[in-house]
Structures are given as structure tokens and as C-alpha cells.
Length: 267
Image (cartoon, rainbow, N blue to C red; front, top):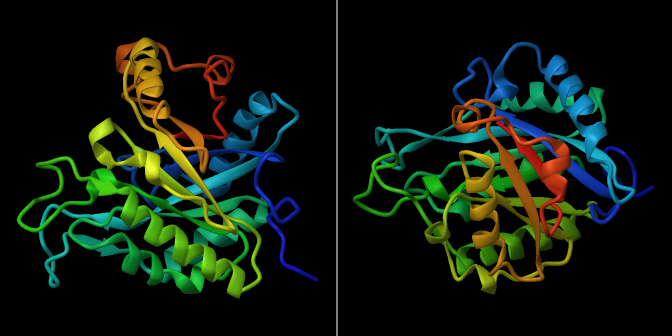
């Protein structure tokens, strides 16, 4: 029997809408996912997901675990990033499986390239319920320090990752993989319109604008406009930063966005 997604089937869209939390273990600084018991957080995701079933979508709970963590210092290899221990990934995957949820491994690469960081996660990506998330805000070049400058990537680099992940998925006879790409501003991804489709992979552009509803919707319109047909739209909400500018957007307001988001992430 072929491996399936946590809640059945081999394809993500249009059956599912992904709803998740992001973060890392033991700290609220990375997001809500790292606060308290993982199972409690998944139950919160489940409750939030009930408001996102518009369009006859089933909800796929998502844990977006920051797995490659950007650092402000170079480290021994000069890459300005570290990789969390496998025991942590194993803990989050076990929790995801208790609730039939999906685990996304988030990569903040520092001065490293995305592709080798993703390839280093191959043992985990062999699992049918594990996907990837790329955070190019933290992808800096030689001589640059994360946090001092905005990082960036290109459609070419994203296509390299997508092509590898698609081939990997087919070779291992896996269900579709989610490949989320986070984007805070237009300059974060060069030539986003050239991002290609890859068999076995669903590429999601997560719009990560921060602030009041009007500001977030303006960022949304600006970033989804050049998005190619090969990508699916995602939307990120920030419990703290958004509320500093007003109320957190409701599920109803999020679902009024066009195109309607297929991944809704809370941090």
C-alpha cells in the first residue's frame, strides 16, 4: 500500500487547507509552537482550523518547526546558522503523528545555500508526513550578517530545491510534499514569477506581512500579484506584532482575501 498524507490521500490541494503554528522548542521568541506542551498547541491548531473549512476544504494541521536556526555569529563553519538536534525533530514528529498532523522543517540558512540544507534533512523528508519551509529573509550573502540586512533568494534557487524535492519524492514513492517559501517584502525573492511547478511538490508562497489589517492586505496584494500559477498562496498572522497595530485578523477576514489562502500560519 502506498504511503499517504496524515489524513489520507496522496495530494494536498484542493482537498486540504493547511493551518499551523510555527516556532521552536522551549521559547516563545520563535513562535507559539514552542510554548508549553506540543499536544496542547496542536489542539489549538485544530480549534482554529474549524473556522477555515470554507470551500469544502478539510483541515490539515501543521507544525512548522524551525529546524535550521539563523545565528548572529558565524559558528565554526562560518555559515551563521545551526541545526537542531535530531531528537527534537523526532519529538515533534511523534507529536504530529499523535494528531495526524504534518511537520514542516523550516530552514533559516544564514550564509549557507538552501539546497544543501534541505538535502541534509533527507532522512526526515523520506517520511510521508514531513515537508519543508524556506525562510529567505535569513538567507544572506558573503560578508553579510543575518539581522543586519534582509536576506533574499531567487527563483533559480527555489527551482533547484523544488526540482530536487520533486525527484526525491518520486524516487521514494511519497505523497506530495509541501514546500513553503516565506516572503516579507518584494525584494526577498527575485523573479518570483519564474518559480516553476515540480511534480510531487506543492509550492506555497507564505505572505508574512506584519501590522494592522490594512497593511497586511496591502502587502498581500503586492506579493501575490506576480505569483505564478505554479504557486499556492499562504498567509501568516503574528500573535504579538499584529496586535501591536490593532486586532488580529479573524478567519473570516483571512478567507476574504483573493486568492483565498491555502496555508494559514500563526506565529
